[in-house]
Image 1 (cartoon, rainbow, N blue to C red):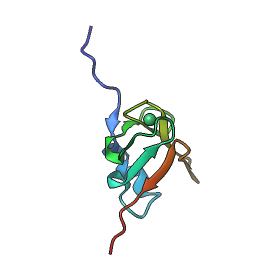
Image 2: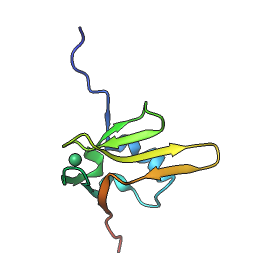
Image 3: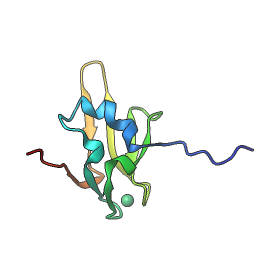
Image 4: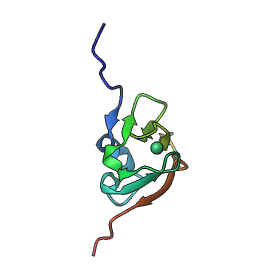
Length: 91
Ligand SMILES: [Zn+2]
């Protein structure tokens, strides 16, 4: 038996893939889970990179917040698990 090692990474692991989609660093953004309403910094989500594409799950309810799948020609971004994503405005 092995110890309970989490199979996920934190939201910072998503920075690379998401930098291809967003012009800003979203790991510092605040997101609200559409499932349980928990609000938190994106970097605190649970990111699974061994799924088809990349999946970020809520640390509160484990619901899917965000999915990113890249094909040779396109990137699919599914944000339906987020009520909103609040990005800091740079002055
Ligand atoms: Zn949640």
